[in-house]
Amino acid sequence: MEARGYAMSSAILPEGYDSFIYVFFVNGYIDGSKHSLFLLGASDILHAEWSSILSSAEKALGRAHVGLLQDFGEALDIGPVLRSSIHSLPMIGGLGGYVPTRTKNSTAIAPGVAALALLVAAIWGFNFVVIKVGVSGMPPLLLAGLRFVLSVVPAIFFVRKPAVSWGRLAAYGLLLGVGEFGFLFTAIKLGAPAGLASIALQAQAFMTAILAAILFRERIRAKTWVGLIFAAGGLVLLALPESGGAASMSPLLGAMVLLAALFWAGANLVARSMPGTDALGLMVWSSIFSPLPLFALSLAFEGWPAIGAALGGIAPITIASLLYLAFLSTLVGYGIWNFLIMRHGATKVAPFSLLVPVFSLSSSAIFLGERFTARDGLAAALVLGGLVVHIFGPSGGKGAIRSPGPTESPR
View (cartoon, rainbow, N blue to C red):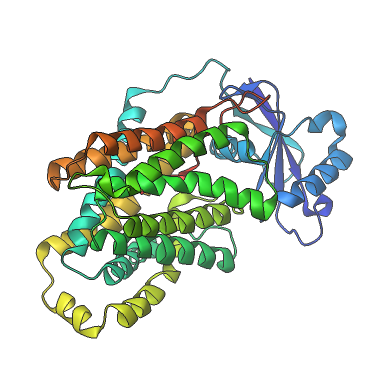
């Protein structure tokens, strides 16, 4: 199958848009879902503005060439696949180029691709062990700030800035870097088990859906409510003090991890307003806005004596932790993940992110000696089971399955 590309000039776009938008009319199935139209381009397209752009496209190309656009989230999943497959599409003119697509039954994934996805999941899962080691030798907010400094320099000189506003980059960097990692690092420093923290952090998926419903009036599907019930039961079990075991998490530490998940959910909503944005570029350039607030909070709450002592007597293992967090987890992890998403699509690759908590629990038990009770195991199963229902459950009529995008993956 193939899709023909139509180049639309800014003359038929809503007022205020300057760049070209490419409209792809697709006949057939892509990753198991039927799609008829995708809009891709450098302009900042908000969810609420799709109808206006569709109306302009109908006037320019005719209703027969527009077809039916499925919901916004599904368009985001397929967009990078189409964009990465464009061959010789001219910048000027009408028809030109083609986009090869896959049949409905094309679900196999090559062993090499699966191995790379597993490698990234392992890197991100082991990340929680590294955080635990890092905060044992350095105040958590200081460690988080230095992590983002190293994520920016020198990568910013080699990674292109995403075509999004500075305001959105700042919002993403503050919510993710200061909010999520500030609370997560502090909770782990105060005793939250690394493995169980990775499980509790998965509540971000449901918080994202709830926040989207509150702020943008998006409909919460039945599968999300079912998954939320399962996950909530698991989180309650994690918070019960009588669950026992060396790896149990107190209600206070659990609340801090859930606050981290809430900030992550807020960052997800910001990321959704930047469709098609390169995940690695987003992480590098948004990290500009994280270090200074984290350093200020470190000075206010951790104090200069602790900061000076940590920097003056920094141990090699703490340096190794910083390098892992900044380079291996962020640059290498996101670099590989983004490559896989762009080449093979989120539907095939993103489900591997569900293995991150599995790697985290396993590595925490092996390298940190964290012990888990049967109740802790049941709690983890409920949270991960709820997440599976939320992602892979029936979509209520359309039958499509939405996988989390690269910016929603745990790290």
